Length: 326
Ligand SMILES: Cc1cc2nc3c(=O)[nH]c(=O)nc-3n(C[C@H](O)[C@H](O)[C@H](O)COP(=O)(O)O)c2cc1C
Image (cartoon, protein in one colour):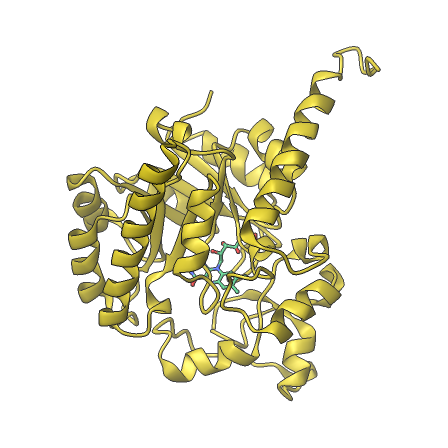
């Protein structure tokens, strides 16, 4: 049974979060996602200053408020932000102040202990999700008072994990009774349905939304996604110090010596020098092969909805005896 709060469930047209992506997500992506019924999010550090961040938050809130009145629709999904809870995030305190002030309905924490963040967000009625890549991390996060665990499995874009989604989800369900969000290479409506069947309440999709007109990814990056398959990826800790999936052609283009990559020191400050590295080195998950063209967010969501509906029908026709009722 779904653990989604009724209010959230009623606001969604698909059980999907457009995942936060460094240097890719922006207010237009968030707004278009929410208007089309999926949760739109962005990493707080994508706004390079706190002044800009506050402008972004105000812009998102006003646009969505307007859309709600204009469309008279409940199917405007909530927006969310991603906060890095790590000692190297020098903007942590300032960004948390803006969270208190502008009250994003969903706050997604990465790394660190989300206990204090959860108290602040719950005080204004928001939800807190934390992303985890290991069972140990999931167990710790489960005790911090958060609402949802995001299981970032193998093949995910960004700092993807190494665990298989079947095994990870099943193991987490043994001790976790809250919302579960599955991530890693989920790219089609059929895969959203598969995640639901496994017991996920929501899915987290990043890569599928990079090659969109609203995204901040460069044209070259978007074209590389269209041209790539899962065989064009490399999983390495040589970019940020934490293992992640990257498009191999982007490393080659940046002149990196692929045979001799070395682990970087972990730095998640996303300072200007780090941002420069991410501008040339592009990340993607193993679902990259599903990207066939550059589309609008609305078009991607429409495609996902059609695939999801078709998957529902196909599932209905499968009988327990193992034969299909055609
Ligand atoms: C380009 C890119 C940048 C990302 N940046 C972040 C980030 O800043 N914070 C974060 O929590 N996750 C980040 N992620 C991970 C996503 O939020 C999400 O976990 C992942 O994209 C899901 O896997 P998928 O890409 O296979 O759908 C990033 C992913 C990509 C592809």
